[in-house]
Image 1: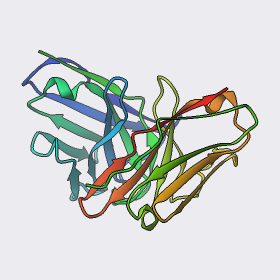
Image 2: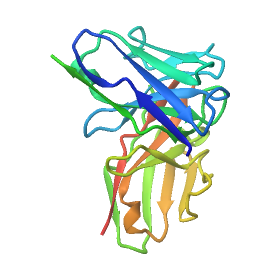
Image 3: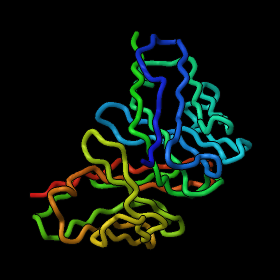
Length: 122
Length: 108
């Protein structure tokens, strides 16, 4: 079965950190750009960050640059999102998605995980 | 930053056609991708590069893009097409991906 699986979500207090992971089964991540996208309750999709196949190029939306860090571990076929200084505005479902090319620029997201819920409480 | 504008809702009777737009400044010069998100589920890619369909997506789904408007058309709408639909582009001026606000499709 082809799928992406996110993990690491949960309830955390404001100002704390959380690390999300994205693993794949039935498909490879290593040759593709990988993205993180979030969706606040009842809201639309918001792209957060992307990493190239080789881990060299990274892209972030302005509101999370400096707080969130995307990285990948080729040996484990996983991609992570380290989130620091969390606020209640970060409460969302977090999805990882595979880009359709090695460089995460101007590509569609062809596979998505089911998401992991992050709740930031004050 | 680049903005994509989608109508909040569109409705169509079963078997009819549902069309939804995605507006943006010269969006016709960009590649537009469309995602379907059913309630409680993850998004699914239904159209990429303006008008291409991934394998497994019915031919009822089609897309076009020109000028300031991209369009997703669902022909022969079925109850299972009820979902939110999001358009997306890459904004090279900001190195950001941008999603539209989404259109909720209701099958009457």
